[in-house]
Image (cartoon, rainbow, N blue to C red; front, side, top):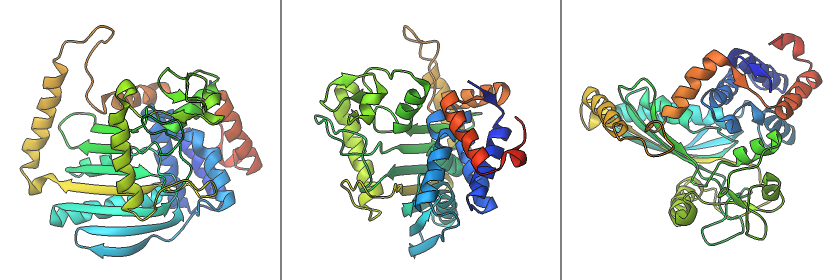
Length: 350
């Protein structure tokens, strides 16, 4: 697999999106979010999506430069219509709006509908924790195509329905829970297929409802399982509630419409710690709590206990030094787009 610097991959993504009519500031935001996903080790949410996003622009499922419309607003709340703009752009702006509201009123909640894929949720909660606030975000695809079977079922009825919570702290890396409520994010199935690899047991079932490790069986009518293995009812219950917050509360609805555009409905909530207690004390205690949890002796097969978000922080430090690996299949698709869009000269050499 070829290896690239994050700066080069950002340049690649930026020039491809600009060539497709994306305003420069939006192309910069999208490229930054995608490469950040690769840096922290979530390649399933990174540059692998460039060809997919270009295809969605071609179909009108992503509208670069779309207007950001506030449909309803109160001091602590807002309802945002993204008009099928890049989800990274819409959600980043909405999170900034929630942070500003929480600065004054202590708490804020915002819903977003009609926007494209928002990528890795961790970026948005990190925006809040960097401002001394707790950030929570959930996402769902409304009536769009589904990926996950409910606990006890074999047909797809849910999205991967991620949830993310970020806490300000005195730790070097962000204290950040960022998880799909399914056993795995759908992008990791695509990644395994592109790499010619099997997936671990417990991730997916085939169309008959039987366990499988072949990613092709997922694309052949199978489904992803809820998080929790034999306790999957817990992941399923959490997924159900995420869908209510991100699909029903946003007004997207539910169900399956095979012709629907991909739409990430989002619920955002921000809590200003200073409205509850001293921020400095809270950040110090979160760090102390992390260190206390990490004093647990490692179990067999483990070297240490990691706090939520630590593995991503360690991945980022390593990949900033070593570079980002991109599987051959994905890179061939991206270089094909660079040639087609005639941006190779603008991008330059790795």
